[in-house]
Image 1 (cartoon, rainbow, N blue to C red):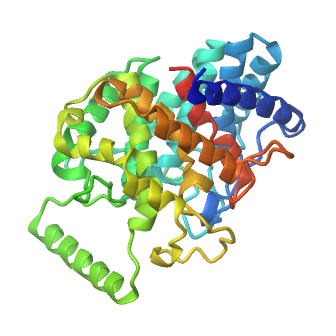
Image 2: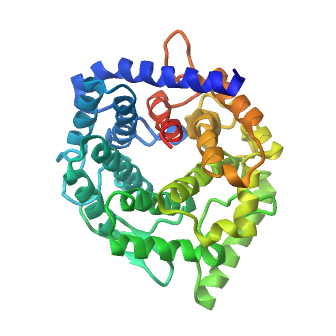
Image 3: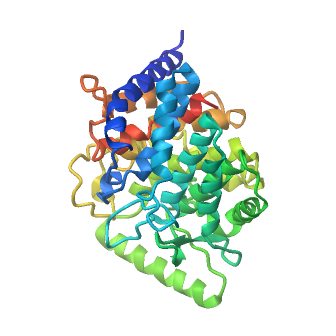
Length: 387
């Protein structure tokens, strides 16, 4: 038996053990505990983690046919449909920081949609799909910019969410929904977003590393403003010795994971054939990326993150975006386009366990700012088991 096979079996048992350990808390609260968005320390409502755990419990039910997991799915889904989760009947109430939107942009809604679809797949209750479709279509899609706007918890409209991975994950959640509930308008919007990726949306470095922000400009004025903003930020980075690459390395697999969701649920899109995407995919398995995830180097981070206490490794990597949960799924979905990556995947899974898993407490609570969220994010690994 190969080391990777042994690790997969270990993770399957670990997931079931972790799920069992959380059932009492779920019964007590009626939802899973919220975290604080890892190193960002934005207090979150239970929506995100409850949505993630819906996927985990649904997998456990499929794996074991044990009714306690089905009941757990129903409890999670009941919360997602509740007034507490959508207090004004519009978008999900995802975070409580008064300085930021309570819906957590498009990414908070994407996570909730994922949970609703997982609940449907386990229970076959159509209301979960209908709610997911309703929330998705609340978000105006601008065909000039090929981006979705943020919708507040009260239903009012904000500007675009200009973080690339937020837009990408919202599109990915649309494909997850489309796989269970075909909807021509959702499909149209997602396809327009995918069509715009190579020319307008996705920006990368020469290495293939994906840049964090969307730069989508149509008019000369907008282009000049982007150039000025870029120049200002570049000058600031040079003076300070800091840049965004520390953070972008921590998010690269998170981006490619969303592309893997798209491929699984929507199929191949034209962008997957292009050099820009192929370089981004190759970078997932590169030495520079994995060195950047394991090195401290926080002095390079342009974000201050003043509350972070554990930074011996990249604070956006194993302790938050969890390469050990994400890379196996990426490799599985894009297997036909890759050389054998089993040695690297085995090492990354090993790293995830060594860096963040506490054997005594059976929790991913080492070298992380947010164990509730990191434990919930094992749902990303679950998707690979269920692929």
